[in-house]
Length: 328
Image (cartoon, rainbow, N blue to C red; front, side, top):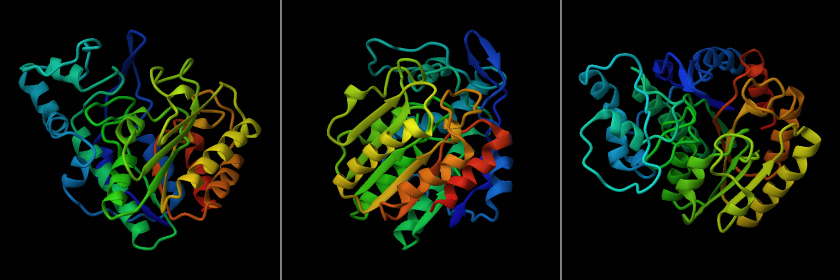
C-alpha cells in the first residue's frame, strides 16, 4: 500500500490544551508521529496542489483566518498559543471583528484546539496528504493511506475543534466528486465526525456513515445522534465499553448502507482511539480486532483512501495502525 506523509506536519507543536478549567499536555502530540512512522515503513511526500481543493470544502474567510491567526495573535502583543475563550453560541451573524480574540471564538467550537506557530503549515500539509492518497486511488491504486496530522473530521467548513483544522476526508471526497465519482466516507473514529457531517450533509455524490461513541456521554456532545440520520447521513452511536462483538453489527449495518448508495470509491476516516487502552476514549477494541475490521470493510471491493484521524495510546498506536492497514 502506498503511504503518504509530509514532514511539515510535525510543525504543529501546541504547548497544551485547555479543558475542565485547566491546562493539560496535548493528547494530539508529536509522539503519535514517530509511533506511526516507525510502524508503517517508507512513505511518499505529497505534492502541493494549492488552496483550490481546500476551497471546495472550506470558506475563503476561514482559510484566511487560519493562515493569519498566529501572526494576529502576536501582533496584538499576546504570547504562546492562540486559544479561543468566548463563543457566539446564539445569534451568530456577520460582524466586523477587529480583534483576534473575537475571531478565534467565531471560527472555533472548543478550547482544546489551539493555533500554534506551525499549525497552518501542518494542517495545510495534512490536507495535501489526503489529496495525494485520493489521487493515488483515482489513478488505479486499490488502496492508499494518508497519514494526516493534525486530524480533520471535527473541522467544519468554517470552524476548527477537536484537534482538527481542515476536514481532510471531506477535501478528498470533494476531489473524487469533482472528477465524476460517487464516494462514501466511513468514519470509525471513537468520536463522531461532526465536521465531516456538517460539510457533506445534503451534498450530491457523497455519503457519510459514522460509528462512534454515544454523544450523550462523549465528545463532541452536540452532534452524532441517531436521529440525525437522513438522506446521505447515517449515525450509529454505541455505548461506552463496546467491544468487537458488539461493534460488528453496527459495522455490518454501515457497510450495507454504503453498498446501497453504490459508491465508486470509499474513504475511511480511521481513528485508533476505539482501542481499549486509549486515554481519552472508552471502547474496548483490541489490536487484533483491527485486522478483521479492515478486512470486512475491504470486502466491499471499493478502491479505498484511508485517512488518519485520532488514536492517543501511543505505545500501541503503531501496531493498531499497521494491523488495520494489513486488512487492505
